[in-house]
Image (cartoon, rainbow, N blue to C red; front, side):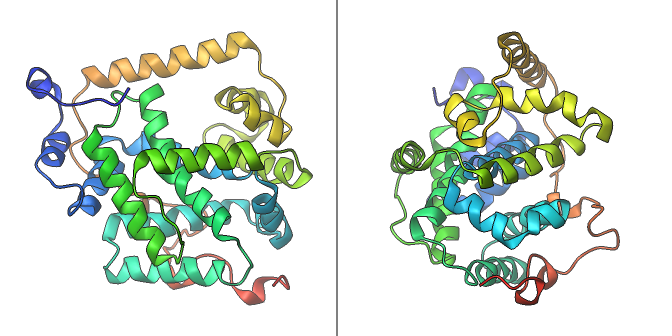
Length: 296
């Protein structure tokens, strides 16, 4: 269920929520999206977007292209960092900022090197819209409000337009319908799915635990996946007790967050130190370039 903020809840909402309530999602969608992703739900939206990209690897046409380039095999951490930085440069600085426009240009330059269908591009974009909403409904301290969801739709429609994606849905329900129909039609097992998903799963786990513990933690990721996703990835079914325990842990975290003070300052992904770029980075140098491989 989508949350709404009413007068009885007013004393419980954060300063960020209060600011969002005063904004217009059709006009101020960039500011609202920034407040959601960097302030109100910073950790949750980051994880939801990681999971959103992860879901796309269950589509053979998407995972097959990623396998062909070899980037995930040879430079998995850099590939992850580049994707997160490029998307965050846009959301943290603005679509029309110099940094935002440079990031979108870099994204488009990479995509234009390959024949990627509009349907695949639109599906990936749809995951960015729907997964944070789903994640917060299931695991967040609260669900998104209608206004917040509308702002996310406007934000990703604006981003999708700048990426040249056609037939962009106009509402959250339309994005959801497209997302569900696409997955029902295109989710199926492929070796490239298993390859890219396994590499990404292990990378994400290794960012939180020592390398020797990565195999032990794999079932935790599997427990976050629904059955069609696990089947398309070739993942083993996790034990039911682990799924219940994971939900309990995430529910407990959500309950604790409701009792804690809201974040006081934005949590900027672009300001984070990364092993891929120990001395900083230039947006124009992020991602892959034609000379990196011989794929066209």
